[in-house]
Image (cartoon, rainbow, N blue to C red):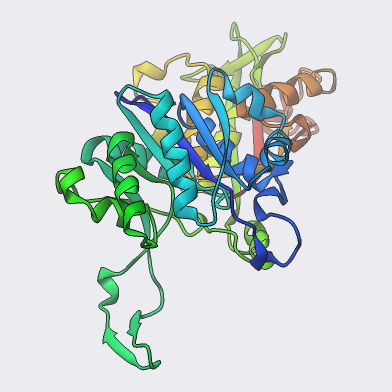
Length: 400
């Protein structure tokens, strides 16, 4: 969780009709990751920061349906903790729906508050984007994630001809969440409503009233191609078609000696010998750590926790793995599965397998059926076969 001097509130916009989907069902309620598009989007924010209030804009009379689809993910209730959840009816435009949500927030929040406004139909927003947007909003007053555009951009005249050739290096695609201080963006929305003009997004509304904002500019942070807004039926396949899937491989080997404790997968197992290592020597967790770092391209366990650094002496490998997995998750990655092999002569692994699997799943906060561990002997060959060493391998698949 991140810290902020201001309280945080979130508006998830889900009041549209989704007519372009052509499915007869709102895109925010389509199934995804064991829940819905809406619950997946909400979960990303709840796992990243503490929000005092979450507002979900819904169609008129649509609060019950939105609530049902939000709680399809059973983890949402646990993640909400003391966050207050509100369902606010929207209007005929996104701009008016957000105005309704901001007006409601102003009635219940009196302290300094940063509000993030996010399309609920962007379920693949990363924790890094959320963190960066909050930090930049707190520092600069307003922030938005942006991505580079691939195609050359042109301004087109009403007769269909090119009016102006835009310089691509200065053009960015704008995403959500967009962050503002509640009092400023609320006043800007109120003035925008008087103009009876439809603005393209909330940053344009913020820029339109410098007399309210004190002339602040909207600061940009790095967005992500995966943070795509679902608009058409084919977009729901973004998870498999546009998002990355990566495979990582990790391995570790440690000498065994008497007088050392034997750890495997975070479980201490009674044994005649234990691993000799700078940390607790858990080869299985070390192999998993390297596999995760390799798949995500974030480095390796040696660069994360240098063995020459005394601060990691006798370190708990579960804590090391938690730190690594937190960083990997913050870059938007999720675990599809882990497949692990342990090479050891003693002790017998089978009686401990399920405890080891459950331990690994607990550290990574995933279902146990996404983890499998099997053990092999080396038929009395080499150091492992002679009972003087233990080796582990892990292959992982990540996606985002």
